[in-house]
Length: 212
Image (cartoon, helix red, strand yellow):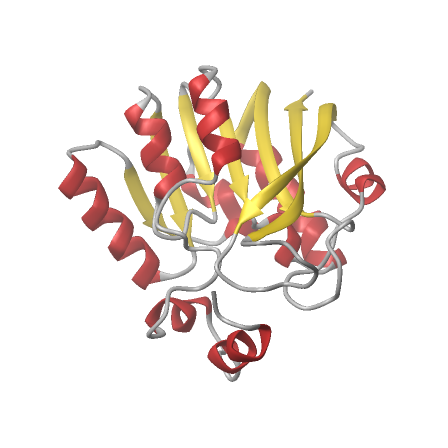
């Protein structure tokens, strides 16, 4: 596992998300497989219907959903990541669709969804963009639809890496027009040391949020 110092050096100077996917090593969130929390959701039949994978990266969660019968669409701002996601879909014979797009403007897709997955996108936004992102999700998710969102938790030691998010911040962000069914402690699998004795994981919240 790369040290935090090596990870800082790897990410230093990058001005676009596309550059993260151009690095020699994959970025620490790109583990080459879905996060275990989302595998568990798929196993319970919850990744279903018309599904949007927000900030899909190289597509593992959209492909997971497609393999379980969902009509999956992955959207990411990085053309390089989307290209790799399309290659994976072709290689696996899965009918997932991948598009370059802005997570702050899902309305421009002119599509609506029954389910949204967010694995590590919410926590990249500052306060202003966080509100825009929630509004963007609302434009894409049908009333009664469900968003499964996993973000870094404020229980994760240190301050290196993504912004830590508290349970109260999640509740506040989705206070208008949403019903929060659950916020539970979980973990990300990662390939960098974000602080503490984590052994390849980082502490997270997994939120189940319904569009009212």
